[in-house]
Image (cartoon, protein in one colour):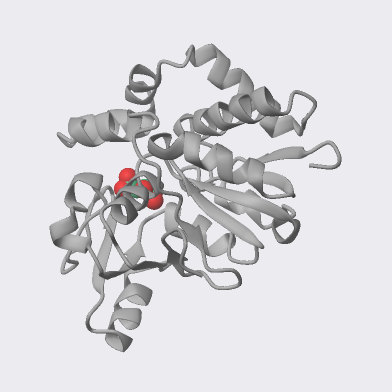
Length: 246
Ligand code: MLT
């Protein structure tokens, strides 16, 4: 990068509207669980994923493409009548390889839709943190880490992943400039000591997953650098495609 790179964080999907999406490389974050699940879906060979803001919008998209799979949750459980919920463990090669997914989750889908104007937007999770860091550094632009938050409020699980990515970006570019929310995210990561699993289990969302008996989902979402896939949005549209396919 020919000048000091600027690293910014949007703490909620709502903050994305005010951010400089059009000029940045954006990393979309929803650790529990939307982006962790979609990264797994593309590692399992999914062809494409299209976010929908509501279950009704998802069903309308499916009417136009009956071969697509309806995926999504409300209250962290599968939406009635949908093929899949939002657990990363459901997105196996047998279920999703070569398939088009229509995805309606509470927060993550909204952030994906908000990131559509970005020249490059990638999906980030702890599972592909290293690969995402490389993709952000390879693009000659400022970076915006777009946390989904929880129904309009910042959430620690997304903010701590943003902090993890910031620490890695700063390792590569020590003079990179952080905005105020990025400073908060980096602090949170440093305070977590990098102990991701206990940190996530201690969040409200983590506690909710445990209450629902979804401890294996939590374990999956806490695993770091297990996947090399970096799904990205097709520029200018909200459609998400796997790596390497424009
Ligand atoms: C969301 O998008 O709000 C979450 O991914 C919900 C969930 O945990 O399934």
